[in-house]
Length: 205
Image (cartoon, rainbow, N blue to C red):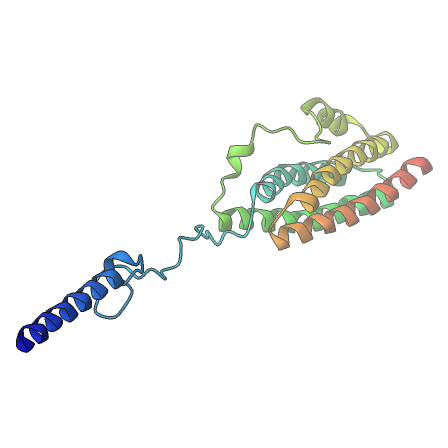
């Protein structure tokens, strides 16, 4: 009788031990896959994070560069027309030379940024730009002479610069690339000063 009780107790103890082990794995809800010796994925693995492109520019930067290149190019063309003329006041020709000296290198910089960004400026060719002269406007400037040409150039360039200010201020507000935003602020400062200068020159003619 005593031997029977001992055997029964031993069997009961083994059953309880097996039950406890089973509850610790399947019934407790505890994920054991992350423990050593388990082949499943660890429960502590981080959740997927947004893909980082490493891109330092945005659509506003691309638009600014793509639009400012032809805008600056026309300013160079207008200045070149004036510098080819005779009888233009020296203050006006000096301004035309400064415009060429400033905006030529800026065009090169803007082109290099678009290339670095992998952006194609041709994709923005259909967008309108504030302050641009029409073909007829340029023909009038080519035909004008002397003081009349100087007045026309100043009037057209004031409008042209005002268009550049609009685009540059948009970039200053909405751009992401630090260098592009810095250039936009420089354009605002430089061309606002030139507008004031041109208005004084125009009033004196």
